[in-house]
Amino acid sequence: MSLAREERPAAIRAALEAALAPVSLEVLDESHKHAGHAGARDGRGHFAVSITSEAFAGLAPLARHRRVYAALGELMTTDIHALSIHARTPAEG
Image 1: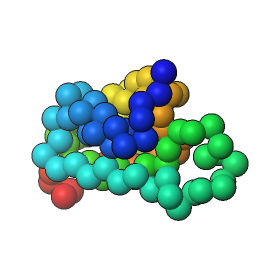
Image 2: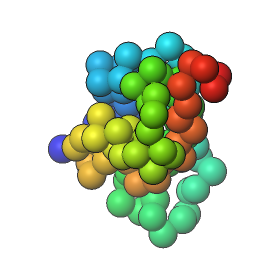
Image 3: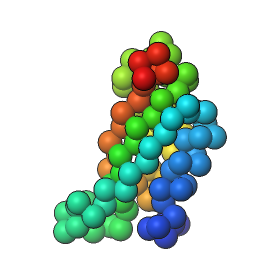
């Protein structure tokens, strides 16, 4: 079951904070940019995440994205249609 549209950014933030302990995190709801887009018809949203976490140390970009997807879990199938990810370590910050 999906969340109300206005609850989604907070749910994304909470899931990422719990799993990855970020030192910085920005979650943007960009769904308004995709109104009328075929992928927006199912009601799920488009989001951009910028996250800095020590959990990404030593990981290639694809592995970092996989960690974000894993942290978001079911939200990826119930509430998120598209996700732009900028993941870095504090040293890269």
